[in-house]
Amino acid sequence: MRILVCKDYNEMSKKAAQMIASQLTLKPDSVLGLATGSTPIGMYKELVSMYEEGLIDFSEVKTFNLDEYFELPKSNEQSYDYFMRENLFNHINIKEENIHIPNGMTDNIEKECKNYDEAIKEAGGVDIQVLGIGHNAHIGFNEPTINFERGTHLVNLKESTIEANARFFDSIDEVPKKAITMGTGSIFKSKKIMLLASGEGKAEAIYNTVYGKVLPEVPASILQFHNDIVLILDKDSASKLDPKDYKLV
Ligand SMILES: O=P(O)(O)OC[C@H]1O[C@](O)(CO)[C@@H](O)[C@@H]1O
Image 1 (cartoon, helix red, strand yellow):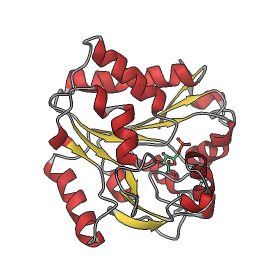
Image 2 (cartoon, protein in one colour):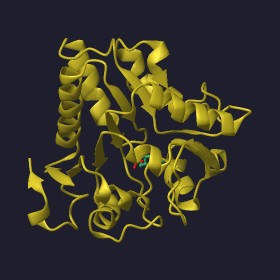
Image 3 (cartoon, helix red, strand yellow):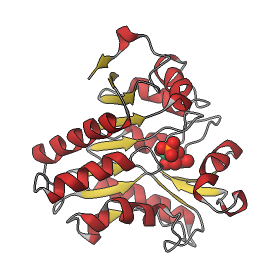
Image 4 (cartoon, protein in one colour):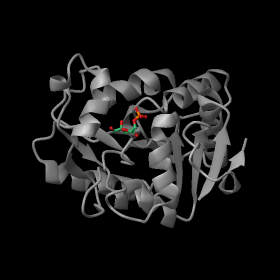
């Protein structure tokens, strides 16, 4: 588990975008696993700037998003489909058929989840999975639970997650209570993983992820077993780590 600590959120975003750009240089038809939430917004801004400067090309890239709210129409500005188009897809030359986001409006959850995992497999697997992390160390919408979920599945959101995400909605009652998310098993199959975190509020989750016991109650802790993962943090989210365990960049 490599840990890079940047001086602030903007530097973290630049570093993360550089890592994605390197991936696309090495493999133009990369399969990118993408995250939503507030943390990756700075990285997406950097990627759009790099694309506009002609430094990167998304024409052969395929993407798979980690999660999507259940029964929230794509047209809703709080859907992750809407978020991804606003923050990235509408501003780069990715092909529509190469964009994959779980269909939160499906009337056949089991089929949707199975098809999603199969589509990832058919694409050759995720080359680099971008992750954020919740205050309770959830990754995607894999909440603290009693077992690590293997594949993409429907999940009941924890109250703490609903409260954390209520900031994006007019009222907490509007926050969906369920979501479709790639499972920790699906995430773990990614060839590389890049986890981003910013702010003091994530320091505890990062500490538990790096040093804690590998438990489904701390979903991100499973990442200790991955053989090619980098955490890109800002100083605040890294504040509980031992400086000998990370590199300042
Ligand atoms: O980056 P944020 O907004 O703190 O969100 C952290 C995590 O919570 C989620 O938004 C799910 O609640 C994830 O998609 C994200 O990685």
